[in-house]
Image 1 (cartoon, helix red, strand yellow):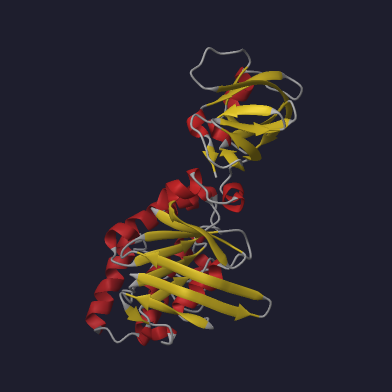
Image 2 (cartoon, helix red, strand yellow; image 1 turned 90 degrees about the horizontal axis):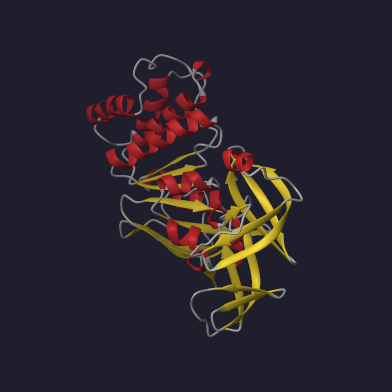
Length: 345
């Protein structure tokens, strides 16, 4: 559906380099990466707002590299909504139809469908200043969809919403995918959003795509230390490999299978590490005693940092588990993890 071939863009000191990406029809594709990695510029390039120096962009097998934005069949929604303050909800949504050659009756019917789909009925005559953030976001979405775009681009659409509205709008986005034919590309830095909404995605860094593929592969099987760190693999170690063992500063970790390489990296998600105040009889191959060095609140969860000899591990526990085990800095603790929880690369 969307094909990016060898895209290169020069914007002063910042460059997008060697961007190659394939997105399937009606797919919900997630683009992730740290601030300044080029995510928004990539969206704007697809939309026609930024022109690539080299490379080709195709939508539905048609090359659109040099087409103006209004002829691409693509809509883009930014995180700040960009609604016209002097226009009502209906007038804001209808604005996109002024530049579209679709039949007026069909356009009005589509507008009514979107009012119902996005739960905007009853708000038609209100102005943006009287709407909540979630309502403004739904109006911006309706304005983008009223022209029946082939592709919908979303730039951090949930970042300005509070947690309750963010959860509500996730459901709206799910409904959109099920009730429209548009292919959706969404930029986000929120991992839970990415996992909840996308089947596939890509991680960008420094103007390049570091890894693209299924969300499961990106989160569980990163291909570089940058991706591993970005997706929260807080236990990331350079190791020496021999047979089925990885060695870190003298600490031996059982991998469960052998590797031909002598050096590499291992990564373990913090939620895959089990803590206990006593030694357990467990099938988990890796078991170590350690000392808690730090506890960091992450809202509903806590990061517990444990020193095992010269190696520092990070585990994730609930507040209930923290209180039940009476975890505190300086406490002796046992940690366990399965060999299948270890990603090696």
